[in-house]
Image (cartoon, rainbow, N blue to C red; front, side, top):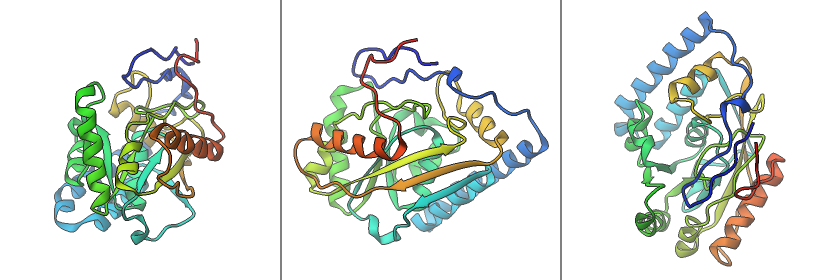
Length: 266
């Protein structure tokens, strides 16, 4: 069930926990997966600062396996094919962050709150993530400039332009500000379509806490995260047009159109 999208600049999703299927019952499998997830996270926190992006990617793949999530990537891209590109994707879950980091040497642009998450926040900071204050319009030009600088330096920067998570049965409009960074740096935009099977099972929406979401994920049998890497978009036109092209490209791959603000109702 979707609530109305509120007006204003702050990204907001109408998706609630009513969008999600009932979680499976707790089991010994859940306990074992939780223990494995904690072990992988602690190992990553202790070792990533000394081992680099390839080791971080290996840790992220191990984290997905520990949580019982199968990762599929189509088509495969070489590790060195990600230099100087703005990666944009639809946003469903914290799993999106782990999955993208598992397949590419990306620096993530994340909301400030992520930096304070237990374990995951520390891992994000140590991996070179960039942080944005979603409520602070005054800081936005500086954030865009920082992303452009990273792109010029040859880094891949990954962004979720919806600004928040959606359930997978609906998707939100792409915020266009970050696309200015690709235009300023003169680098392509690489759209990535993210889907989960079963649909909606892993979405991190509504009043869920991170722990609630992790528990739901580890209880789910046969959960698959699919990343579809789409054709690069040239840094042409203005940021509004570029954002719309990326949004349309991803919607064509997921089969889920991106609604406009205020279009959903209870």
